[in-house]
Image (cartoon, one colour):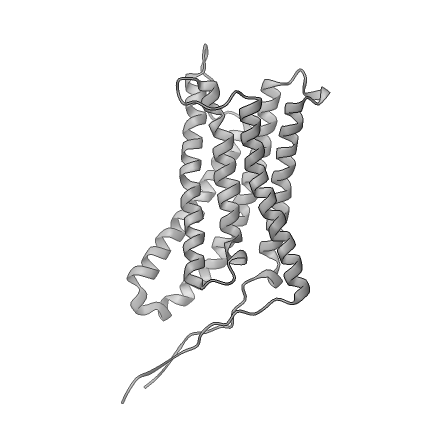
Length: 260
């Protein structure tokens, strides 16, 4: 008796013309908002907050915190969420690799951003600032924790299932498929929290630095408000792109049928 294997290849389901046009416009808008958020936070820190430094100037070291957090949690994590929609022409393995690379780029941004804000608090002259007392810092801890719960298990599962379990790929397919909605839910929840945490942090910073003039709408206040609106708009657009089934990279179910 022989064993014959039949592989059913997955075929991508094409979107209609109207859906494709809407998808293209939303994707373009998402890119403008993601790049715009990074540009605004960098411009704010350079023009109004004095630029960047490391421990030799705690005030300038703090400026790394908003830039790196927006870069990690918004720019790179946002692109990671969009990967499965934007890279439709690539095979599934390539898409997973790009998705993973975006998260790999986000992790050092988040880590260095956290170090920068703790150093700023601890080295502030003449009196250090207490750590982890504000709503912003509490929300930040929750966001970092959820991001870790989302990314680290995904890396571990991916490592074992695609390196050590290739010999039983069919047996692990259902397990990996069951993790997809959990991973996706953690992703969008973390992104929501990241935007909310950024908004509380921006509000906290302007109230500490330009509280006396903020109500008169100075240029710095307008830039910070524009940054906050850009982050909210990016959240809305990315949520629409990732939640609508019509934009999903739909594929026919496939598997391996075995005859003895």
